[in-house]
Image 1: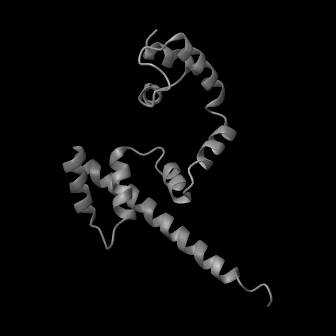
Image 2 (image 1 turned 90 degrees about the vertical axis):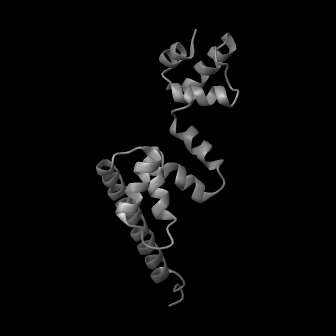
Length: 145
């Protein structure tokens, strides 16, 4: 049986199985033991409780949030997101779109759409974070009043 066959049989993606091969959990050509492992893993891997427990193993709250935030993003989207999150000053849309075109081969008109989308996501997240801090500041420390 090939990895492709195992992916179909157990409803895993090839990317997921590739990770399992890379970390040594299964062989590139799955053995009978690998098939038993994949069968058991299939019963477990989509359960919400399992996912929560697994995420809790990542000690850093910031790292957990980053994992969830970037879950569905493409590499160019992750790049733009991190450029805006880590920017020391203002970034121009044209500059970041040009970087996407250079580094990822994304056409400039498509790159501008990606930059707008991710920039808006970052600004929204920063506004929410600021309003949370503001509301915590208004309610915190006044219990005795």
